[in-house]
Image: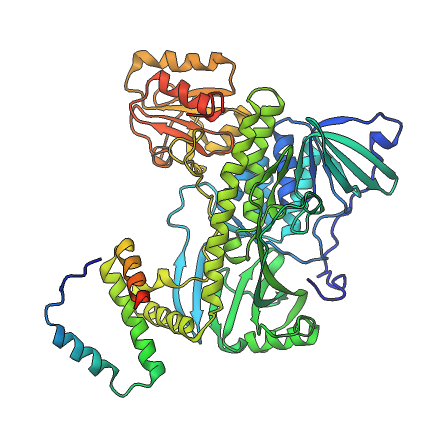
Length: 60
Length: 551
């Protein structure tokens, strides 16, 4: 699992995410996040990295 | 679990009954010792009886009932997977199954009012048998009984209820009750195929790690006037069933299995009442003409024994393991348990392999059951989310599957039964996987297949030297046959068998010069590249457990 900075434009990404959630209910936002998780997971495509990410996310 | 009276559901079927015949023990004969006694004539027990009979091995099969099927026309298992069909091809019942059953390979997954995706199981198949045939379980059992009766060797004893099993020194004592009186017999090896509530397993007090699910389902087997496509349809959430799951599957005689996921708090007796079932059907299919064949509620339970061998007693099928029905991993795995054990018992009782070969039954089939339990538990969780967060994850997967290919493998409506690979062990060197029933040509050029060929050879390991690269060593391979071991050697190539479509090479993982060893249950014991006779000899010894265990 990569933990060094690797996102080319962090502020741009954050802005895109907040914009995507605008006007959504909590349930709609949760649904968006879930779809996003699976879309990103498919980009990663490495089971070990994915499971490490799940564990890291769970750890908070 | 069941409603008060299941006997009302005959579905127009008259199942065969078999007469009680007084055994020799009750007609003046002395108490006898039998090499192999099987208890329970369901899918697993009958498969084992038939497999032993087909290998020319004598056995006794005790069944407490006098018919096949357990609850009138209740079908229970309906989908028989490729390895199972290959086994039945070996035992000789496959042609009747193919004729009576429904061959299918197309499946659709639906959510709401539309199809999320469709798929075909056919493309990946190298076998002469299709991926699946659907057929009522009682037909499968019926064909096995007919076949056993034709083969001889298996003494089928109906109306024989086992009341007590006791392990002694090198022998198992079995007490039996019959309409003609009680008697005891002795078995060198006893196989418990008495199913989920096995009294034998309970008698030994073995831990089963039983878990019961909250999920409730109601099976409705129904005959329609109208024809529907022979496809498996699965709704993750069906609008006509309060957005719960529904299965729709065809069996023999134009009978459909419709399986509805119920409210976990439902009253099982209420949901399986005739008028309630009819109303549910009309909500599903509109105004169609139909006839109910069988209706019954069920709840999931699973269990798994830690060890499938207990002294001289083996547990096969539901007596050893029960999983949720997703992917048809129940009946199929019981049948495959039997096929795994049959040849081992045949060789050991004939003195052609050491007793420790029998330990590989547990070493191979217990992990297979564990794998089936894990796979079905995951499906269960997909279909019955336990929290709003789980539901959100599932909805995300379904939404993505509608739009993108990558989402489809995440939708889990059941992973269809496979021939489980076995863990690597001294007996299966690279981890045993099933060898599909691929076409071959025989020495005379005629077309055959691997299963038919194995049947013609009897209970032997088949060693295949694939396209020999060292012509001078072929005779040394062939000489291994003279060892007296259950082994037949063949060359695949000029003068030997042929691989007309290249599929044999593919399923063996062979290349020119490879030696592959195929077990009597058509699992690969190993395949070595650039093989020498010494490799083949060592592999055969390991596969037969003829080497010291610490290999």
